[in-house]
Image (tube, rainbow, N blue to C red):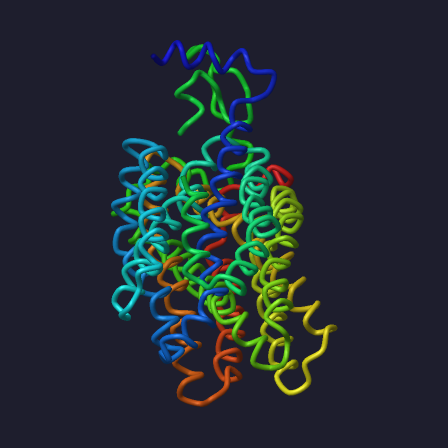
Length: 422
């Protein structure tokens, strides 16, 4: 079987890893769009059932929390069995959740379908899952390749989000769930290749390049999860990823409702949500490539700055909504903020590279998902308590600053240099 796979891949006119990127692109387009559509569905759900905003946003958060608990197990499965079983399980969960969602009557139905099944399924087939195996396929163009794969989320937004919004406005949110449901239908060495498309060399001449290694002792360590959690670098990454995802998902869930409340039409609010993902396409690709040249810390900082600017623009629009700050919000969030995904995997891979990388990243994913769960809930609860998002947005700007600082403390550049610095 192994020889057959190696022979088949060798007949392709391009490196097999780019085919993996293409498949990830399509998976991202469907999975992320289904999860992002939660923001479109929240206003009609709140109107129909008269639920508190915190309760409604909590379904999104609850699905993330369940995913967080399962993430270390998913990481171990990824190391042992590869991405196929993980992603297919995610597809099955998301499909079940979307087809059951039209039958929602009680809050727990909402939490079980759009929360656990859709949210949990999406996490098994989007950013965190792909970040556990895509870095294995590339070294020189690691973040560029991941940026291209993750740009699928933007294409999904172009094609699917406006269509879903039109269904919600004309036929209701239940019909949109069914529509999405109809759409959802490991290493290069395993096939005789090396990362970036080099041919595998005989053992006698195979020498691992070390020119980019700064800390020889660290790089020579076989990093297991037990060893990793005893380092400060691990916990700096945890803090950075948690705070970064607080910023990401708080606005993703609440953005549509906020914009309609301050005076924009539902169509404009839906356009803004889709436009963010669209602008994220060049942002993820270009800033991913930039990080391969200047370093992961700089691009993570740019992403955090993008989210901070986004929240500042939203605060500015609270009493004087206009198109100029709306455009600033969309561009900063999409082009810079979404670029975080292009370096999430590389940061962890370059610090804890080795056979247990999936398990380590899967555990760190608990922080990613935990931040994604906490952000929408915190923003919703603060709004319910104060009648405004202002305090929540200011708090999240602080999270952006903390996230950027934590990545500089984790310092992947002090373990391995990116190719442009080697």
